[in-house]
Image 1 (cartoon, rainbow, N blue to C red):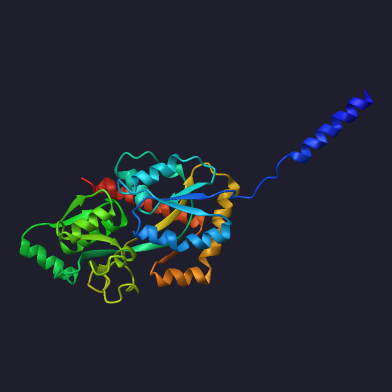
Image 2 (spheres, helix red, strand yellow; image 1 turned 30 degrees about the vertical axis):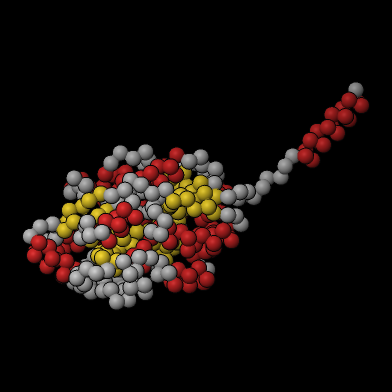
Amino acid sequence: MRAICAMASFVAAAGLLVLPAHAEYPEGPITFIVPYSPGGGTDIGVRTWQPYMEQCLGGTIVVQNKPGGGAILGMAELAKSYPDGYTLGSTNTPNVYTNAISGEVPWQLDSFVFLGALVGGRSTIVVREDSPLQSVADLVQMAKDKGGAVNVGMSALGGDDHFMLIQVAKATGLNFTYIPMNDSPTVRNALMGGHIDITAMSHAEAATLKGSIRPISVASEERVELWPEVATLKEQGYDVVSGSNHVISAPKGIPEEVEQKWSSCLQEVGKNPDFIADAKKRSVPLVVMSADETRNYITKDDTFLRALWAEDPWIK
C-alpha cells in the first residue's frame, strides 16, 4: 500500500512538472480592425501609433481595413469577435454611437470595452484642386449663383465630417444635398470627376491627395501644419470645431489582464516623445485619453446626440 501511495505521489509530481507555464499576453499577432479605407484619417492615425504600441505590448499588430456602410461593417465585425484580446479595432467618435442612434446596427455601446485613445482628426471641407472656391464665403456665393443645393458626397453619414457640415449649414444657410457613397475612394473619385461639388474628410486624409484636392476650411481651433495656408472655420467667421477621437476598443468580455496591458501601454505611448514627434510630423492631432476618460466622454456625447436626434434627426 505504501509503495502504491509513493508511486501516485511521484506521478502527480511529474504531472505538475510538465504543465505549461502561463504565457504572457500577447502570444501571437493581434488583429486591429480599421472600419475605414486605407489612406484615410483613421488609417493614418492607427499606423502612426502602431510601431510604438507593438514595442510596448511586445507583439505584432496586423491592421485590417474593413470599410463599408459608414464604418458599420468593421465595427459590427469587431463587436462579434471572440473576446480573447487578439481582435481589437477603432471605434471612432461619434460614429460608434450615432450609428446606433440613427439606425439598426448589431451593437450597443456596452458591446465594446473602450480602452482609450491616442489620436484623432479634424474635419475639412474639400474641393477639387482646380476649383475656383477658396473659402466658405465662395461656397455660399456659388450656391446663390446656382440657385440650388450644394451636392456633397459622403461615405459616413452621422460621422464627425457630417456633423461639421450640419453646423456650417446652420451658420451659413447653405442647403446641402448629401449623396451617400460606399467608401472614401468612391467619394474621392466622385469629387475629382466633378460629380459632386464638395466633400468633407480629415485634414490628414486630405494631405494624402495633395495635387488633386484641397481644403477650403479646417474645423480646428488653430491652423494645421499640413495645410498652413488654409484658414479655420473660426477665422472665416463660423464658430465650428469638429473632429473625431479614434477610440481603441475590444469586444466585451476580454480578459482583465489584456485590458490592463492595453490601457497601460496607451498611457505610456501617449507620453513617448518619439511618438509625439511622429504624430506632429504627420499632423495627426494627439487625443490621449485613459479608459475612464474615454468612457466618460462617450457617455456624455451619446446622451447629447440622442437628445439632438429626438429633436431633429440628421438622417431623414
